[in-house]
Length: 263
Image (cartoon, rainbow, N blue to C red; front, side, top):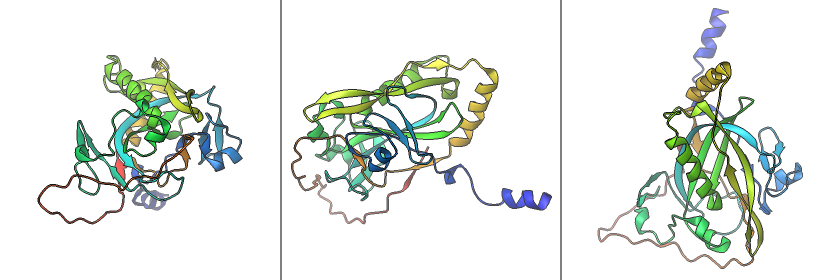
């Protein structure tokens, strides 16, 4: 028994090796696997469990961590190809891309995607929010908020930050996640909606979320491998060539593999 226990403790696995189930908000375009499983636009789909959650019903979750990044796909089609450019070092006013460029100088950068039309959002480098959490059954989950869901993510972060009772211990409260339709010329698009924070009163449940939350803080979250769900757009013009202002000093660079993100 002791030998078996030692074997498992020395397997080298940790939170960074967990495959966090991603829960996707399904749009009118893309999401073929989810739709084959019975999901409709506005519903949520978890590929790991093959579960469909109706958007009008939603689900409750505890927020563990949030991280901000940028993604520029460089194309409008749905594919499994990685983004042309991305940034994990997002700072106020700019940041640095994975290619070493100053994001504040990039013509594709946009800070308020919810103010753009669907077609405009498809050709911009947009902020994305990775939201790591736990559902009420104790299952880890990941939500990616981008485009018109960026503003709800910012509002969620505001709730978590300004709540004096939480004091950065986000595991003490739950939020209800649902979807809301947004009208556009191409039809309905769906955005995430986060409800008002509700404090957890059950002491046993609170301790369980505390322990699990601490275990998940080292989880690495990768950039999306491809764009498989997008908002419908009536007309998509070809993307211009990606350009950026280069300082006078000539630089050489190599394009690195997209790394994982560590909360």
